[in-house]
Length: 181
Image (cartoon, rainbow, N blue to C red):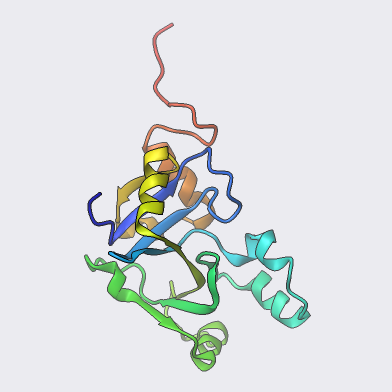
């Protein structure tokens, strides 16, 4: 399988895993040890499975209100990927991703109105062992697409559906080609 760095993984409509169903994942590492990416279309405020375990009411309110906090995947939820200027046309988008556990930086992005538009905090990431992802792709769980910065012009809650529509699919995994009657 060719290198997936700077590619998108789009989950197929039949994906039942609650973390990955209706996901668009940007792959920022792909090597001998496996593949790492971040889900880019799931604001935490819309994810019941993440919010359900939160006991701190203030933190829960911040998660529910902020449009800047995203769920990146189930691994290392205490680590944040900071993406700034996401509308950049830079070819190697993976260079725009900074991993951080710096609480001061996180607070600054959340509470400072001067943080750049489009700045996202993406908590956690997704990861696969090399053969694991290869097998999932062969099984038909994922479609690989080229990265295009225009995906950040689409509201996150609509991104997955728009991506599969461009592939001729719909959310029920029905091929979108029609015939004459």
